[in-house]
Structure formats: C-alpha cells, structure tokens
Length: 455
Image: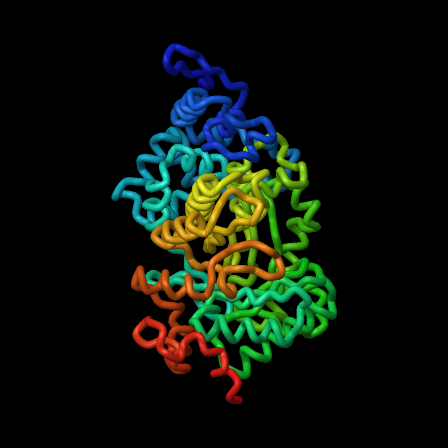
C-alpha cells in the first residue's frame, strides 16, 4: 500500500488511509476547523492520486476508526457480504469509480456490489467524482420503501410536510398541514418537530396528525420528531403513529451523545412493527448531516464526508423508510458557503443511494451562513435531477420554529412540473380526487387550504 505521490515536483506523504481520505476531500470549513483538510490544492490532488490507487482491500483493512473501538465500524463491517467482496477486493478505488459511471453498472448491478462496500470505500469513490459524476451516478439508483404507503418509485418525487409551530399550537400546525396538502405535498410523510420533547406533547401531536389523516383519508404516514425514547413511550401508551424518528451519526461516541445505540434502535423497530399504525416493513426515519460529529467534538480526527458515509453504513442495518440529509443546517463552522453546501448535498445523496438508502434531501441553509436562496435552489434542482426520493415542504420555505431556510410548498410543485414527475401513486390519486392535481399539475383549487374546512 503506497501512501505517497509526487505532483509538480513536490512529494507528499500521508501517514494513514484516514489522512488520505481527509485530504482528498473538497474544501470544507469543518475539516479546516479540525485541522484534517489539505493545506493546498496540490496536496489535495496528491491525496486523490494516492486514493485512486488504493485497493478496496486496503480500504477495508484500514477503517478510519478501529473495529474494536467503535460500534459503527463493527455494524458496518459485520454487515458486508464477503462473497461479493471477494470478487472486487483487488479493484482500486479509481477502477470502482470508472465502473460505477459506466453503462455496464446498471442499478441492479450497483445494488449487488454495494452490499460489499463499506463507508470508507463509498466516501473514497465519491471524493474522486465531479458534481456531474455524482448526479449521473445517483440517477441510476432507485430505492423504494413502504411504511403505510410506498415512496421512491421511478417517475415520482415526494415531499414531507413539516408543519412546525413555535409554540406547538394545534391550530397553527393543522393550518400549515392543510396548506401543504393543498399544494400536493405530504406524500412522503407528515413530520412535526415539537418545541417541547415531552410525552404529553408527543402523544398529542401523534393523535392530532393521525386524526386529521384519518378524517380526510390522506394516504401517507405521520411521525413526531421528538427523541426516539419519548416516541416509544407514547406508542407504548397507545398513541397512533406510523414511523419513528431519530438523528444518528457516524461515530459511536456521537450516537452516545444523541442518546441512541444499536440495542435501542432494534427495540424501537420491534415496537413500531408490532404497535405502530403502518404495515411496513420500513418503519424508521433517520436524519443525518455532514459535521454533526465535529459539532459535538466526537469526530476522532476523521473528515466530515467520511463520517457521513459511516452514518449511512450504520443506518443500512435498519432498512429505514426515509433518510433526511440536512448538511446545511449546522452553519458555517461545518459548511461555510453555498458552494460547499451544494457539493456536500450531492456527495451525501450519492453516498446514501450507493449504500442503498432512500435518500431525502434538505439542501437547507441558516441565516448566518454565506449562502442564499439561489444556492439553495441550485442544489435542489441538481438533486432532483439526481433522483432524490423526497424533499421538505414548509410555508414559504421558512421554518418559523427551527429558523432555517428549506424547500417550500411552491418549490415542490415546480420541481415536479419541470421534471414531469408525480407524487407517490396512492397520494396522487387522492390529490386528483380532492381536485388539487390534474394530470400532474396544480389546479386552480390548489393552495386553498379552506377545502379542508368543509367537513
């Protein structure tokens, strides 16, 4: 294994695969903050050359965090298919990249090979790709999942209604929910972020959202984004919900700080399978984003892109219904500007799909980041072209509770119309019955939330 390269007469040596991966990354403020980034463009090119020549076996034998020290590493390693890996173990990362972008690598073939890829391999190959490569590679991959309804099919684009309210007021949440549905959003999930993480509040929101869905026969699923233990308590007490949510990360110590581990997620899945309101089999909702490990000081000297790939490798174990990537949510300390956010979103979407996850994207930004609405819309359009399963939907693209910018109900309809996409089939039929959509386009009735005041 060679960890040295000469570029323009200068020789660069690297101490480990971990360092090669970090210095091969596109420029990210989080990696600069932790001191793992390349110090120059030339060093970055040298690291990419070294990375391209490493074999997949080199990568597997040198995890960025040792097997014996980290549960995420163990779950990923123990889940790999050794028979398939034996066929590709001598491929270099460069050869893997070329194959993934070839016509030979159809979605079916990529899905098979992905069962033998660990997170470092996935991150490594994505680091060798341009933005267009990431879009093209992801476009081949569809991941279809089912909770109460099915999402992710070819020809569809789904949305989560996020009807948050700064005081968890029922009237405000329901009004936002009505507005979102009136624009044809909500087929992925109705997901509410509560201000207060309490059993009483979580139970109330589960019941109210479920009652509304039942009354209007809305073919989707509901979820309340409090801590997973709070949600589990509510379900055990009889609260009606279809999907359980949890934020996860790429290191065991970060997941510890989130209050989550393998045993808890196993228990949560078993609970929602037997006591939830959806048949499944995909019943968990994970949220992730580059920089979350760094934000709590648990990155272990690993670059944020590789850690994000590890998060996806960890998530794969539970076959989630949806995964939502929010890499722009933390702020400029992890991704400084619009260019970095766009790149991170494309990386994350591709890595997640390559690992086999149903990737939803939130190309979001906070108001203290050097990004604007044009950056956000550019990322959104590129990701839609790449085949993202779903996006957020919120009034005017502004979350009044979490204070960040994301996709609006209007954006949802525009993306579908530009790309000739429809909502998930059951939801599309419901929208047509309600007079919201006709032949995939919004009708004059669309956007009028008062249509839900008639019963």
